[in-house]
Image (cartoon, rainbow, N blue to C red; front, side, top):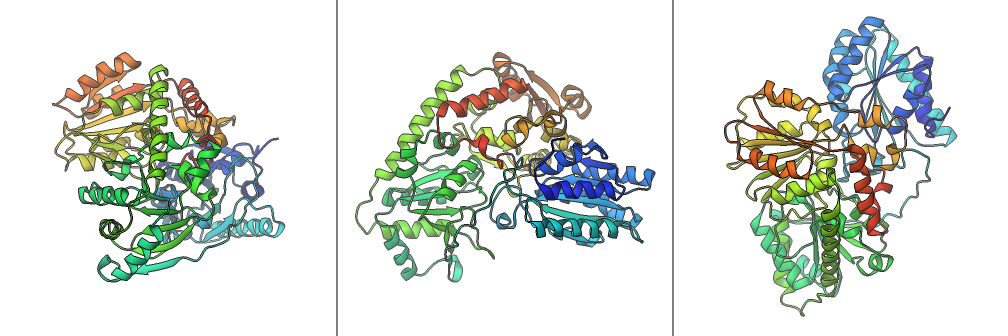
Length: 577
């Protein structure tokens, strides 16, 4: 029997069965792939697939109450484990032995602005009898023995009186379908630069300026709010330093010169580009960065200085090259640096020009590909970003929606938001509805059918106005799982990961008082969107029905056509959930 090659995950599931646990409730995810495989392929285990972790935990509670046996729950990393809390609290006070098993990321990525990471260890301590933390992909004999001992302790504790829930946190590293050797990078000294009132001293700025002169500088903006003063400050910095600014849709930056769609640009890179366009200094600010490709590029690069602008209690070393934590307000930093750099020699703009050439190349390739691509997720989101009115507020759900959006030109859209703090699919609709109440123009949420189903109860919230519009990419479930390497080839792909969502949007629209529109091809998308945008009496839902297999093939074809060193399909972290 073929199963996951991560031995500790097999140990966990085998011990569940050995302790008399027959039912395991799974919620689809990427990080928990090895645990799902181990459970689903164990002949002594019955698996149940429930997308919403909150419902999954209560579902398991119901089984346990009837069978009088422990039930295990398996979820992915990030906010997923938090959604178990209501049912675990109920189980704690009803003395029901639920076994909450959460997949987690390696310790080195927690609090490093990497996708879907929170401090999961001990997060449920007040409502469980005990918490256990193990490494889930270590072949070391002692570590496997430790994993077995910890799981045994957890299961014994759950069943011994008074009974109650326990939490097992399993740290899993990529690749998620096979074992890989982890290489520890040599740590570089990190300096903390701080001063009073969020501004550095003149002497500190002078030192930084001297280090910037003649260097290839890359500035990367993470998620943030619209800030015209910051835009101007960065424009001036780019002008006097020759730096290149990279940013994403949810950065909400609108500078004069920049590289926006990072992934589309980086996927055109050749070996020569990787060398020529490697920066000497990377300056980051704002929240977490979505692009796995820029992370890969900078993590693989050597001899880079990384300065992170933030007032933080910890070092944010997302690229594994951090050398300075600069506690200075970002707008002030760029204003002061620009002022002092302007007093020195004229900037060398060759580095910026090379990046802009790659940007132009990527844009030409994108336009050519988009013109010929079939009806698919790729086309639908690209077209939506072209035709959305510029003043609308755009909200994106996590997963497919936000990742596709990064490939296209979103620069004309005034304001774009996505829940990238933890990167979960939960709550996208509720967040967008709350936001639309305080945005004077229309708010459009582009979401996937899995995300929409997860938060479908949000449509019943009071006070939703006709200014709220929701476009649902209806591709029969979690389309990203049909694409990423760790899940696309598994026999569990459709049932346990994509989950084959069947969302009756027309009936739901009628039930909740929404106007309903539908698009099944390129022509109907343009026609329906016009009516959808013009609807001013009720909030509206646009059901965009796309063929899942064609969508997967189209995205594969796009990245393969770039002939690049950076192919996101090889990144196991591409899917957050």
